[in-house]
Structure formats: C-alpha cells, structure tokens
Image (cartoon, rainbow, N blue to C red):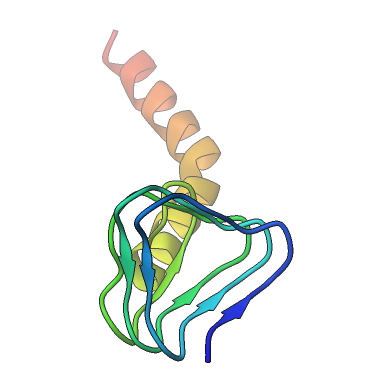
Length: 92
C-alpha cells in the first residue's frame, strides 16, 4: 500500500513503490521513482528519485539530514552576516 495525502501532484511515468508515503501538496517530477518505504515530507518538490527507506524534505527535496542541516544554517545567516560585516569594516 502507498499513502498519498491531499493535493499531491505526480507527473507521468513515475513509480511509487510499496510502503511509500507522500505528504500533502508534494510535487513529483516526471520519470522518477519513490523507493519502497520512502517518506516525502508535505510541500516537498521531488526532482530526483528517492532510494528505498529514505526520508526527504524541501523544495527541491533532499535527504532529511541535509534538509535539516541547511535549515539550521539558514537560520544563522543574519548573525553570520553581521559578523562578516563587522570584520570587513574593521579591516578598512
């Protein structure tokens, strides 16, 4: 069985294997495979096939570990920008 939540959009020639779960509003590009037991987080946009058993999130979708790492770094960007600006002003 496959779980496909509301407003998911799956393009042509895709293969969704048993046990896969697609969260709400997931978009899947054409000719992709979502592997056995893979889970795709709601609102994600798949541009690549997902190996069996993996969890992917984001737009474009990526492995969960990469997505959460990037999200964490993104939240730190304002402070990083201030630090860079401060350091470049000191050199002038």
